Length: 81
Image (cartoon, rainbow, N blue to C red):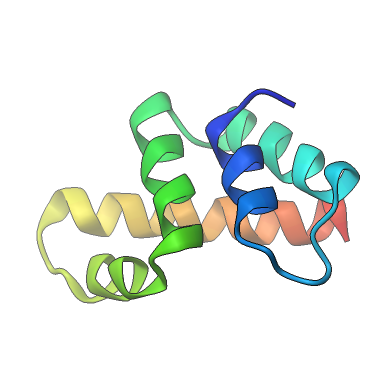
């Protein structure tokens, strides 16, 4: 696993995080998010308040990011368990 999202997943220290799950999440991120969105998603593992701020931001770019991030999360849940 070399992606930013997978590394952030492991570094976040959640009890359910392990190499297999974080690797799966990283692969989903690579399929569903562009490089800029992957960097942003990785940062949300460390700073959930930034995710909340992005979610309520009404600028078009933030709204697109929220739609893409929400799709990433739904796909990761369905794929990775």
